[in-house]
Length: 171
Image (tube, rainbow, N blue to C red; front, side):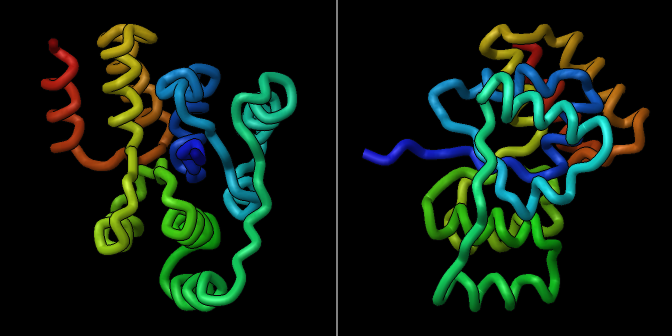
């Protein structure tokens, strides 16, 4: 039986890098294999790319995969590229055809497509919730992470999702 993979979009990697927790990301759902498509990898730059390369090359807990659509996948990829970036598009197409999980907080771009195509997706808040629940980090560390990511100019899903997150982790 094929093992379901978590397909990482750039925003999740950027959030966990800025929050200084990229190294724990693959430990949050340890039963899954974490992958990044080459189209997403190309979007990562600077010190974040160095951290990601460390995860790929040294720790080997994230796998870089070439995105090679063909046939109907290629047609849908070309169609979606009219409205979305290469990374989000490749990740959504890959997840649709491989029945994998998309990791992205870019809900504006992915939510409708994922819901229509029955693609499970996880946001930064989902990862944080399970990191706290599984005792990888404390609630305070999760809240500090959120504040750090926001202070470094990244966007998170919404203030309402933050309120839900905080209420959920107060278990």
